[in-house]
Image (cartoon, rainbow, N blue to C red; front, top):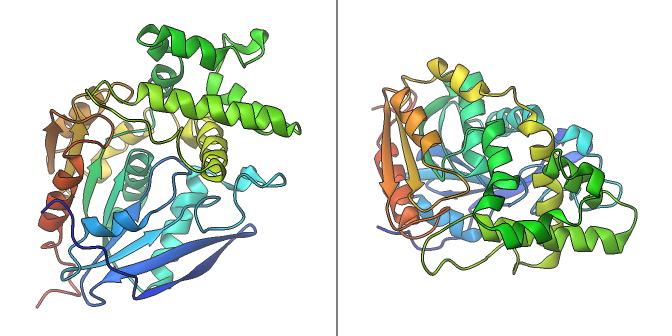
Length: 323
């Protein structure tokens, strides 16, 4: 099964999570089914109707939501007066717990892609008693070396494109943290500079995510308002090292190494090399690693593999659901 038919939510709402933020959520599938939550990428990528299709509607009660500052959550990070100081990894983990409590869910399957993998791992490590299982695609772990790889080292593979990406940054800052430098550009009072920074950041994102033949851009051709939110949030998080201690996920993996997980990664994902997924898998006895040879960053047949992984997770029941 590559994907289930697209269905409409049977419930939805806005949840006040404090700090002036409300997050949009929706539930699809079977109200009495195995609870699950979907964590989108980015940060700032937002949820989409297609994400519902990974969950078997006859087995899952799937929760889809938009993280702070993006999608249908409010306020948007692109708003000129948006306060990003209350948009951190700690805030998002607390939001997840508020949402779980609000929906009266005891334990759930945690699924996600890209940045959503990092967020899901951090959440699980802090609340292992709330996690039934995990299914992750385009595996990331919030490491500083990976962020440097994406913004600087990938210039060795795409030198022409990297030069255009870096030249917008003031010369005195080009030897430093380019994500943090772009975060400052995207917070400029000059709308023309913000627009140009958005275009160049999104063009670079599309350049480095895959070496798969036939790879097509999606970030740089998205709606401009979506790009503005995405660029602002992703640079905010990367410029603050994801608000995590370096190697924090690996250091705390012992807290979740008994929880079943499927890790899915594309062989052609050049901006997120396979070694992160491999190291996680080797240190996680309850995990299974699926390497997709025709895929880059959540492309090719990765969606089909994620759906299959969630099919297997839907058979994991919490004690309250067991017959």
